[in-house]
Image (cartoon, rainbow, N blue to C red; front, side):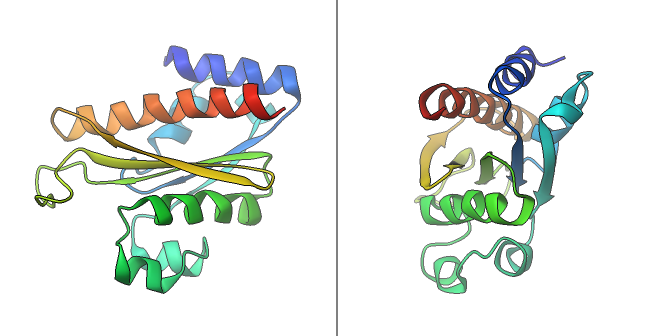
Length: 159
């Protein structure tokens, strides 16, 4: 069991808040690790696995011009994914993950391991850029762990 997921569950319960996720490169791992814990249903509203750009656009409301101009792996996309999760799922706090887990798909500008995580709480939306080392599994797990850390920060700072 993920210790960070347990901390998130406890913090959300204490504050009486719910969470939701928009997952691209993590493909549902953030959600899966949270629901491994008994009591997750008290704080977890749902998740959108938005692996394709069409789901990012049509379900989460990411602007098509964001995908076309800066790409799905970008700060702007991560922010819009997180904001869309608040709207679609109706949770109190949302986290999004988009990136390049590898081993293919990287470029000089966006190497394998590039991950953007977005957080949306009420009217605040922000994102962070990360470059994680390792193979596909390690990059995805690092993104999950960082997502839980950001969720804890959001809950602590904004409520």
